[in-house]
Amino acid sequence: MTVTASSPPLCALHGLPGRPASVSRPTFRGQQRRASSLRGSLCARALDTSVVPALLEQASKSAPGLAAGAAANSTVFLLGAPVLLAGLTPTGYAHAWVLGTTIYSAFGLSGYLLVCAYFVLGSAATKLKLKEKEAKGIAEKRSGRRGPGSVWGSGTAGVACAVGSLLFPGSIAWQAGFVASFCSKLCDTVSSEVGKGYGKKAFLVTNFKPVPPGTEGAVSVEGTAAGVAAAILVAGLGTLGGQVDAQGALAVVAAALIANYAESLLGATAQDSVAWLSNDIVNVLQICLAAALALGFSR
Image (cartoon, rainbow, N blue to C red; front, side):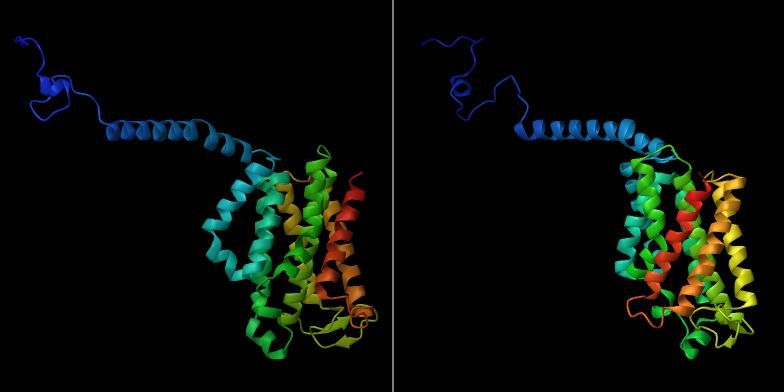
């Protein structure tokens, strides 16, 4: 057999050691690297051009829905975990995530910020003269850190209004009920904590006889004034956020004060004698009454 100068070596044709073939081919590992790089580039581009902007746009709406609500609330809970856990137990933190997600989904950023304001102001009120209240045995449990019972004692009615708004959208009554529930609860928390910490005299709401501070159903001038101010503040935040208008804010404050008075009456007349009527249950009844009254006033 004659091998001409232009023919490739036999060793190259048969894969034997020798001079390498003149035609180079890409290696399998190199192909993998290029494919992986291409996939990463495509995923990053898809995420950058569709998912994140879409979520941000959806989250900015007045009723963004569950996906955007869960994403926004989860971001807050991850970044703000140290602050949140200062006012919540670990299980309370998990339950509060459900509450926050539902509220954001139905009422958007302004509704969510209203709940954040309630949490900050309520936690601050609970810490007022905490050592003195603990020494007297009238402080909140766990130095004011809220567990699941406290979370739902504050948020059951608001979440119910949020679910109602998601299922039956288009009515401002849901927003009024939502604002009234947190308006009433902050009014209750502030009036109670300020009264226990700064009240000079406490009176039973049924007969206005003097009683020790911290007695169920007791009221004080200082606590009542602070509670009314807190109710007006929450209603004002609701108005600024577009949840209610000026007329709706008046209805919300009225509903909150009526419910707060009813809670004091229930505490004075039945709470000590009915075993299952805990503070959390009384709180749920109070905020549900406030929400129901606001819903009725809005029709």
